[in-house]
Image 1 (cartoon, rainbow, N blue to C red):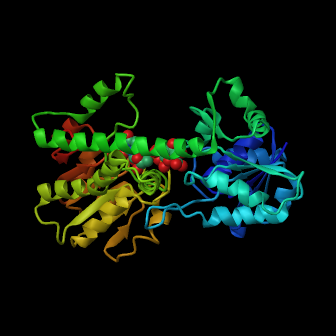
Image 2: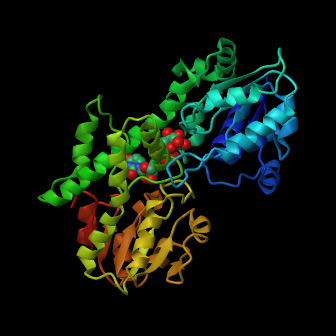
Image 3: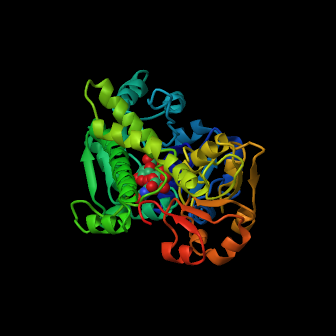
Length: 437
Ligand code: UGA
């Protein structure tokens, strides 16, 4: 079976390389010619553990190809995955312009009946519209069948999760298309991955609902952390979270407090879900509340800094971690960047470091009061306070006594709770965690 993947971003690239590793012949197409040239040379232009190795292995075995000309890839394939980005618009709707452009590119190249699979995150109703649009100009017996096959991969562990997903969701009214999808994902059947076969609309909703529910969990634990801070007296949100998580009805994952959820997916999808509900004349008040709580959460870091430093004006703050979470260079909707912007607005100077996200941050954080540093120790030099904003492992192992010596001040805001509070206090820090003191 030959497969084309339109869009070689995170989702498309992992899907293309992963499907090639299943033994299928895959061509990934992207309009970004420079990106395609890099990929043809085995270079992956994004930070994703294990992805470059996977791409190279399948390039070498001749099962994976890259092209900037999607038409030929579409013509040569019986199944076409669309994995283009669907960014959020200011009114919370998802921007489908790239998806419709991909659809038109597919339409223009159709020479046979095809299965077209939507991997991109889309509003409910998109698969139905896409099938109508693709078949508009086709003459029977030619026919395109559309499948909704949403993506649940997490940045930073996308490769691992591609081969060991929690579930695969396949939305289609066509039993023939469902069979083809089963065939594509056969290696996952062998490891007993649960498959959910359903309608287009349900599959599309499952994707948005997953991210919406994760948003609820994170905002819940963040608000609980704020409550622990208010209670004081040793109230510890991690002990609360652990005990909550021991109840299988609640589960232990995604109960880690922090400066709020960010990234290019979770906030955007939660907003889109709430917006779809409003559009349908109903409401998702829980999701709206999770979003409102999240919008305020990064300010907690500023409150803690103010508690330690008094006025922030003229202070120099070290920020360790800029990406929206560890193991990625992605700074889209990054809470650490929101903290940086808020601190700059308060009149602070910043010394920043991130193991992967300096190149992605430079174009967006351009103030001359930001100094980009090449490691953690350089960043903390002479600072009044330190904020750990992303949970990179290398920050966990910092020698806090040495950090304290290099800094001017002694305020440490551990926005991801990566340090042992007792140890930080022992070396002389005024330590502020999230929901534990
Ligand atoms: C998210 C979902 O987890 C994936 O299942 C989904 O496929 C993906 O969006 C998508 O729609 O493409 P991702 O954006 O990679 O994946 O990020 P997450 O790991 O979900 O983290 C999102 C944010 O929540 C990060 O800022 C992270 O720091 C924060 N978070 C996560 C917490 O603050 N606490 C937690 O306990 C977990």
